[in-house]
Length: 274
Image (cartoon, rainbow, N blue to C red):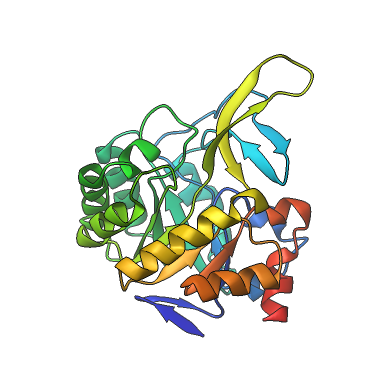
């Protein structure tokens, strides 16, 4: 059992938002109750169809995704997913996003009376939408606005998910903490352009997987040297040896993402190995 600024986890291994659905999709493949926490895919105020196909392309040593935060909105999440997620005996982190500061606040407000949520993760780092997310996470003042707006609507531990697509990630980390975030998670995907197979077109979206591990480790070390807040590290963790590198770099917990697409049981195997 570990505690990260008010968030209690049975172990330090989570699943990364956007790679594990809402958790329930993996119930027949993974013992969800062995996880340190289930982190949902991003929930927004209104339903989103996401981006057009193709939006998942395998790259060398990684995966490029441009899902576009497809989901059915916070009301649907509360009525259809949350009652079932409450029954899972592990921590639940709900990842949220918005196109405006007000939308972030409204999603947090909608979740406020709901039981069974352990923490809120604020997505200010997704590179695959035209409005919000990474645009907020690239500017310290906008980061403060978003985090502050969510902080006013919830007493739950707040996790700010940071983008690597910035000049100085420590400035963003400090801004998020000053505005009320309790925990930092990093990194989200690295902006990357890949050729669409069978065409002459390219897709610019987010790269994840082993290819970004050196970037993740570097930025975690920088943030750890700059702040004292708990850090959830992610970005290319495929096995227990990768996990140990993230702990050595300064992460207090880790999240498994793209590896889940290779083998849904990766997170549980890392927990057992640790």
